Length: 485
Image 1 (tube, one colour):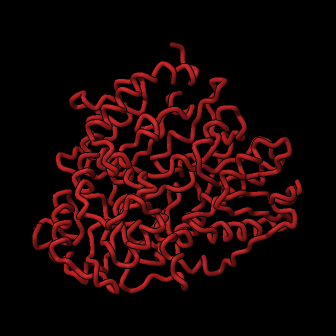
Image 2 (cartoon, one colour):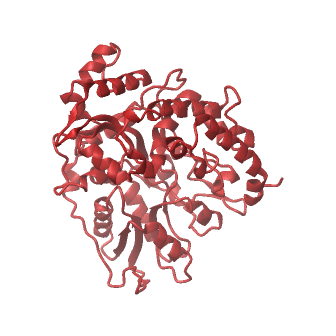
Image 3 (cartoon, helix red, strand yellow):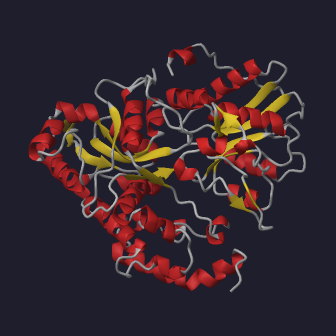
């Protein structure tokens, strides 16, 4: 696969005069495929390219694309309408489970058996999503109602140019003789580098009152910490133990006081995080009140060396620049999450994106057209198109051996994925999960990071709260999920 292929594709966005808006309805023209696609961190160039390719292969049809930051709300509104003319959704949100449960999304059972690039789509799906493409609805029937979208790489991102300029890459190799990459490979090396950065007191260019901190974080999006913390959890507990946990068979799986349990290993992982972020000298002042955009701008402007984030941060950061090109002083890359002490499975990674979906509303009259568009998206061409233009990774297998990355950031993403032996998401086949009641933290409201950072809680209290709340709510959750008590 060569990048030159994509240069031949002219992005085309066909807008209908009756495009979705507050003052009109989309015409249900049987020759027009109506698509709603989320347009946030990954941008919309990749989907416009896919539209252009599909239209070139289907000259008698056209696409009416709504690429919007508000895709979730648009989908929710249209799905509730008796006059929904949408044909395809590409978006994010746990409500996909609700639509799947009541059959409001079309079954894709036949589509996953079809081949793209000589392989069945169900086999082209990345391993971490192999089980989650199947869903048991309220009638007890198991079908494929949605396909995954991205296989987001989350964790610790760093400014490689800052590492080089200040000699931190060389220092790591000297201080830790087993280090070969010039970035922290173990948790010990990460904490050592944090102290080194603080000791060096490197001035921030353009702000003589500030010195470079190891980190910045976004207090408005503390779920960004999940990506590295859950990877540490995978390293400490192992994938098999996590899969057992995700069965949600009893409330005791959330009791971190049970020695050796999977959840006790999650608490260990949170302590690794807490050891870094309980020390305010390790991050830019005021991080707790920062949005992701404010924190990323601090990162870009040299106030810190690293940030916990997701792969979409590259596209978001280049939007802050007039020419969409990173300055030479900022070489954004992802590091493999440093290995936790006592790791039992060091080459494992949590993959972001279980709440994302590619789905077809059951009300569509153009199911076959929508399916043909999905086949373009998940093809090798579609994977390359997304990686080159969205600076991210789709949730489908493709050979990157001969791929020429558009920048060093994408190179680091691909290198990261190639170094990982095992991956996992938070998907569970339990009715407790499928009915959108609980997640890894019991509920997302019990995710501990914000409370710990604001000093209204601590690690021990947070996990005690999770254990007591899940025990207290368990029978109610089971009843809501339709499980016999």
